[in-house]
Length: 444
Image (cartoon, rainbow, N blue to C red; front, side, top):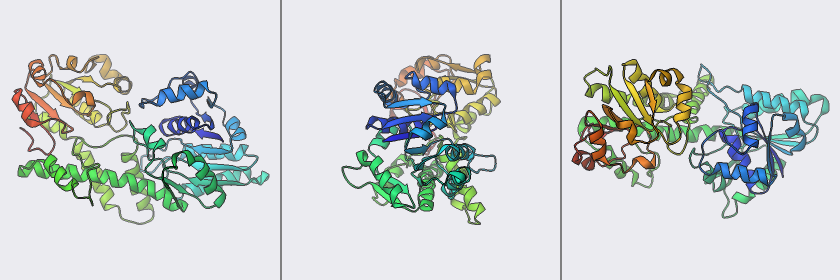
């Protein structure tokens, strides 16, 4: 099948590469000449485990190419995925300008039947709007087309596995022809048992937002419980195991920590709450989830500020982990950003290490990197030399079993802030470190 993918960012690139891997001829379209050149050269603009080899292999096999030309893609591909970004507007709504621009281009160049599949996360009603835009710009040609909604459920760091071995494949369609085409596209991932869930378009659009809102709610719920645990002397890790063992609850997304970030949860919560407001519905739970997360992102700074009795001026704080989660270089809405910005406001210096996200972080904070308030190191332990405390913000696997005695010897103060609850308090204490965690009675 000849497939076009608009948008060569996270969603579009993973989608295009995986579809090429199973034999489709894929054209990826992007508005950035730099990105297109990079991709055609076999380099990728994001870090995602296993993605680069797939891109390179399919480029070499001739099944994958990238272009700036929307017209080339529309004229040569029978199926068109829209996977462009939908960032947050100031009012919390989703910015659909990129989706609308692609829709206009399709309308201007479509000359025979095409199936347009929206992969971007968009508010309910967007698929209908896309159809209207295409109809407007193709009216004089009277071309048939279908528009479907097919949300992505990709976890950064495990996106290839999620695409190639999905739990479910949700498709929102209003025609049998569109459903048959989508079934053909996803047939390679649907052999073991039926994974396709076919529904109306509005329900599919809401399903995507609802899934992310539910997962974010579980995280914020545990973070709120962690605050209670600190006050009553309980251990949130034991509570997690106790409630997670209930099959009605399960263990997924029950980890207390420094708050959630990334490109999905914060943006999608805001967009869903905005939609609720537009239709006159309440969003009490969504608002509370966001409020708890905002508070939680400030927790690590509060711990450090309390330890140093409100005087962080001139203090050097080592950070292990910058990306919003392991196995990515994504700094969007990362808790580390809140912590660093608060530390700088208090006059502190940050010494940081992250396996993948240091380049992205330097791009976000060029002034701090230039004047020494933000320092990067090639190895985790190098960041500790001369530091007054260590805060672990991202739970990369390489941080899970450190030499605690070495940490204690390197730090000016015996302070380890465990922002992801990955350490055994007894092992930390045995090395002479004060262990501050989330929901574990603050200090062990």
